[in-house]
Length: 142
Image 1 (cartoon, rainbow, N blue to C red):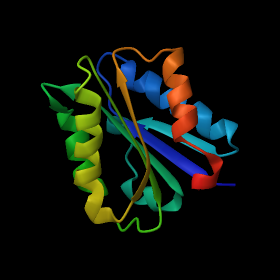
Image 2: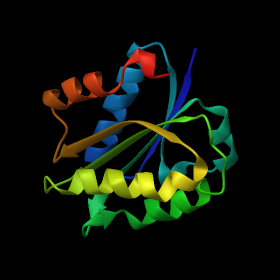
Image 3: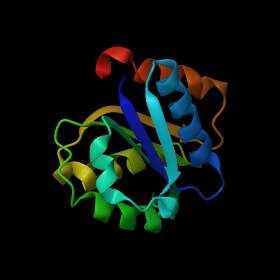
Image 4: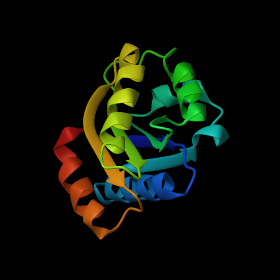
């Protein structure tokens, strides 16, 4: 069984909702999942024990959340070669989630993570995002 960890930041709760929807999808595919808010996650080295890593941030002032950016600096100290990455971002503007996803991907590129899915959500996640998640995350990816 694959093991996944999802770590996110949230302000309004939308990124948390999206993280929970991604967690449900992974569990539906038979993956064991742990989920944490970035400021509550203390064991950076333990990330290496997971096969799939989900990282998500809301948009704050057109950028990823500052606390999440600080968290990613710690992640960048790890060798995560061979691990799969699911990136997700939220924002009020349709251009924000893709930008956040790209910023996360660029920030963690030194770790060797392989991106398998990028999921963006404008405003509060609804049932439509479930279809996007289902299409974006398939069992044969991991």
